[in-house]
Length: 125
Image (cartoon, rainbow, N blue to C red):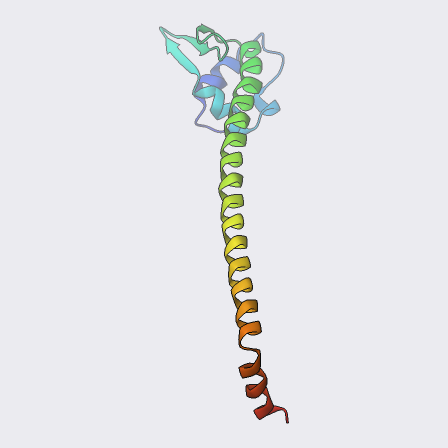
């Protein structure tokens, strides 16, 4: 359990809490920690659905973690799609360039067939 999560640790240390933070990864705990505000000694957690704050209890924390992760996953998927599209564009550009160069080389071979044949005769009689 990371020591940089005092709000979450205090919420889960209440006597009526039936489970602990060992259920969560440090990334999940850190994500929830950023959603918690301390108001006059009471902790409030920001609801990701309606953008309002509610009193933070372990049950709310458990609900917020999957929502936070889903949001992060959606964002990362969108970033990956952009990266994939950029890479596909580069691949297409390189493929086109290679095709053009190969075609130009083939045309050159056909047009210069006699010169090439004469050049090879020097090395292979």
